[in-house]
Image (cartoon, rainbow, N blue to C red; front, side, top):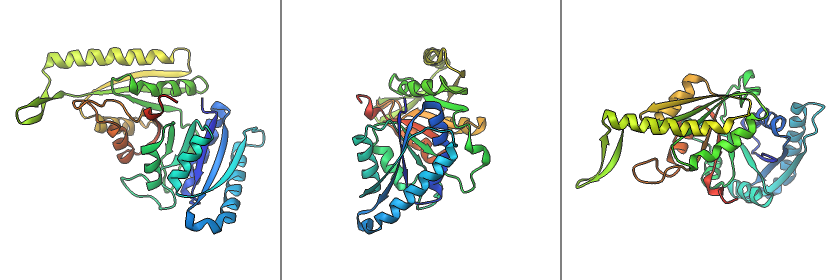
Length: 295
């Protein structure tokens, strides 16, 4: 499914933290890899330096893949604004996945994604894998990105679009996959005073939970015949808080989710939950944008 992977690099040491995961991806899907370096318009005179850098990084990636690897690695140097060039190249070259580290040249910033990653996230129309940068990467981070995957679902058909990508991965690699849905303890209603939140009574909560479990069971059926060890989890409360806490407490390696789910006022705001999880969470994430549904 990820036949062509685009890996933007910005010259920072943090950017190279994507390499172990790119290696794992290519072993799971026999992908072609494109490494790109981008010179800002006022830095175009340094194009040769950028080409030497990208060439050197490509050689390091080949070494990481091992002598027997037949993975194709292509390099490109582009001139312009980073986010614009990344998205433009991905569109022109029919890329299937973009892999980026959460922070790069500007360094680690608590509670915030890097500016280029954020710009790409808001506009991308293909899957985006964001590898969480760490000041001191652990040796264990070199393998096992797909060993424990958490998939938050919001009850909509739209959010289930992420399943197809994880299913393809788990056809090739063994993984513990958890489908998690967080249902609210009430609902928003229009009143004379505006928009109020009304708590469910016990009977309503039981009905909501039953509907949610049926939805999770239907989603889980997609993994029949894969190497996934599947389980479902149903929680009650605030979606962002529950998802982040679950990911942290279960030591999942990857969160896979759609970037847009509910859009009506009483449900999740357009894309807001996934973005909040990325900003406040600590895990790498595979984001499937619904903007590319027609792609």
